[in-house]
Image 1: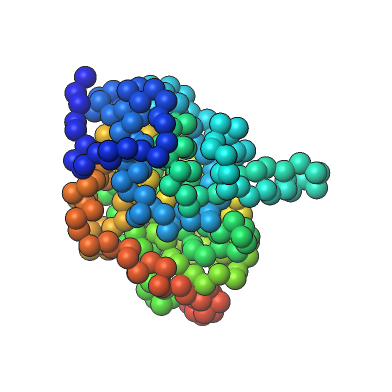
Image 2: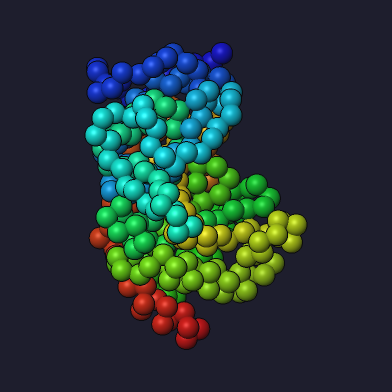
Length: 305
């Protein structure tokens, strides 16, 4: 088993007790559960703005790469006392509800990692107003499995957003694709944001029919890149920036400069073992929340095209 030392200083003391710290989560790299918890302890100042007051859906992988994963919405009973939650009633009209975990606390994040939550899945709204999105997310999924195709598609998406005078931010998904996020002023309901995203990706795909698609049926996509608008629906989530993924090499969903979005980029080169080096560079998303934009203005421009 090859062990790659994390390229960062290890905290002298964590604010939580880690159960089975030596449990290997990534056998090939030798990364343990403790490595994961220490990564989130180190990265939390960067992660915090994207999880603060946001509802989380938990993807628990208690055996790392070697076992099965499962999704959980209800707050686990083993979470620390006082863990922030948001109660949301089910849409069935019954009295049933779910108490979701709300992000923003270091203790919460480390406790989730201790439960095997490798990735951090966040909603596009704050817990204080769960139906009011404050970003648009376009999920770019290459059917070929090649990031090069996702990168080319991402540049088409950026050009179309530029035409709508929307400032956009790119990141690797930590898997084979990428995400493009657009910060917006809080106010539009999730249904309105989803409708805009659906209309937008349909226009972009129609302009590049040989490369892009919005086909729901996988068989109908061929080798084209799927532009997925559905991360914008109420209750849907996206992997947060700086989140580790349950993939080989422990890749990190990494914020990018648009100049870095090239077919030659290899997303797995940004991983848990070397991410400290990435942190020495200027943050390409440093002004993300300073660029809140009007969805209504963009929708008007889209309707004129």
